[in-house]
Image (tube, rainbow, N blue to C red; front, side, top):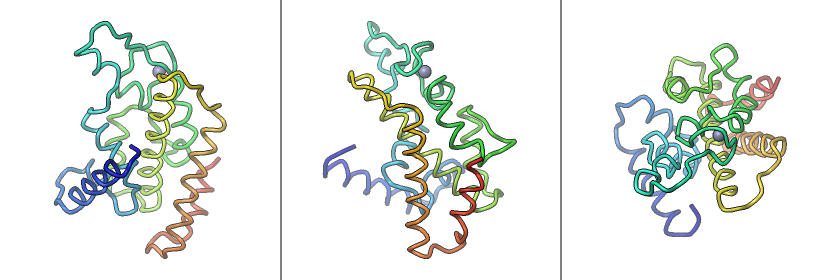
Length: 193
Ligand SMILES: [Zn+2]
């Protein structure tokens, strides 16, 4: 996802999709106004199951070992990685449980229906949508690191980094005076229990 060309095409896709009238509720749950383009783009590819997960790679290379590199105990599929995996589910739970409370889930299809639920309180909906993309992006980055032979970040460091990224986003929105998002930081802190 690095490099000027990639950045350009991500942005281009972003605007294309933002401007297209989308009738699909999950698409609105991804391309929302305050989304971070590189997060939204990856989430969109995941929605279409177009990420290069090992189950998909094995369709054209059957010699490949499809075992999830993060937990090493199940085949790597989109739904496993986001967030049935024993490793990634801990990150998702840490970030999302306080936002979703009783409706907390780590099942892909249920998360997808939650981020498309526009009847939800606006601040909560923003938090769950943004957190979903931030965790998905971070998990994919860690997954790539281990596949390329690098070390994983300690879970506590990763959880702290994602939380900090979300708080930075909220600060930025506050500085830009985004409407309807006053007290968002307080709301976020209330979900950190
Ligand atoms: Zn796993």
